[in-house]
Image 1 (cartoon, rainbow, N blue to C red):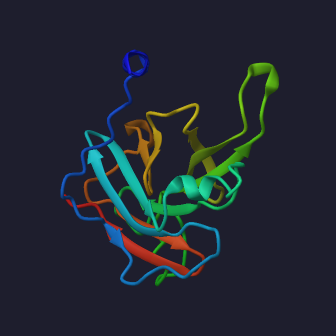
Image 2 (cartoon, rainbow, N blue to C red; image 1 turned 60 degrees about the vertical axis):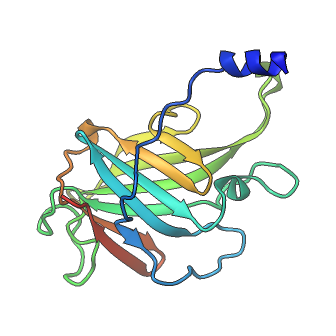
Length: 198
């Protein structure tokens, strides 16, 4: 018992997640997502400004760990994915040029969350693991440009997971983000739209 307590006290303190409180999601599914086999589906998106940073939390239909690891405990890729378009300046005339009725029209950024299975490295004494990744692309102009990449291993303060959610912190320099930024969750041919609350 004493050894367990000493070990727990010696662990580094986890970074606190954003305090969502009773804040409602900016995007929520009206119905259960279509079953996609082993792949997790997003059921809601919370988003808020924390200072000048944009914090986004994707909540899935199952615990994240179930999507990252198979029944045998081996890490797997491709079973956790989310794509969110961000109209950071709330202006449909800037950013992505799409059809007038396409909710993605005017989006300035594209945030994508996924998972990559990483093999064991015996020399480094590291076992196989699944790493949740995030990438942000700039949609201005004719070509997409990578703006930022992070993951739970290299940037744990910006990409975090627990329970059924993945939380991404987009630092201020990846914006700027307005308090009325528009968000569009894209899943195949379905687009769900929401807006930050001022």
